Amino acid sequence: MLAFIGRLILMLVALSAIRSAIRFAQNFFSSGPGPVARRSGPYPLRKGATLLKQDPVCGAYVSGDASLKRIVRGEVIHFCSPECRDQYHAG
Image 1 (tube, rainbow, N blue to C red):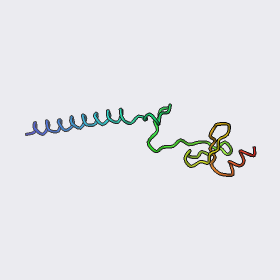
Image 2: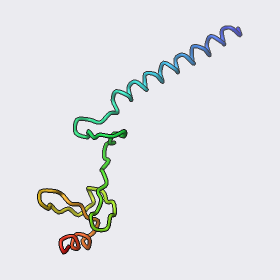
Image 3: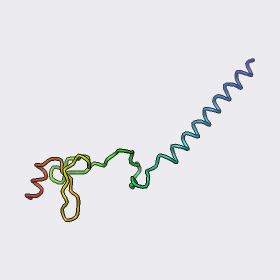
Image 4: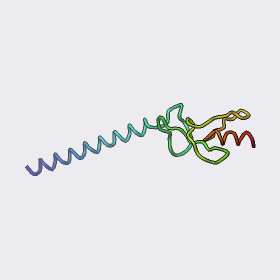
């Protein structure tokens, strides 16, 4: 009886290890950045993640979605507030 329980426990541990290996393989091959969200660096972007942009006037970091944007000489400039945007144009 004791040998049966030992074999049963060993089988459960083996099944758990196989299941963990399969999950790891699925996450490894499916969690990489998609064709749209590619970027260089060690950390891939997650769905819904936005990169922070630095305000050129005060140096604050602001979400690209929440920032005030201006196009200057073909480049998008991100600002944290209307005051910083106005100072940039005045300077």
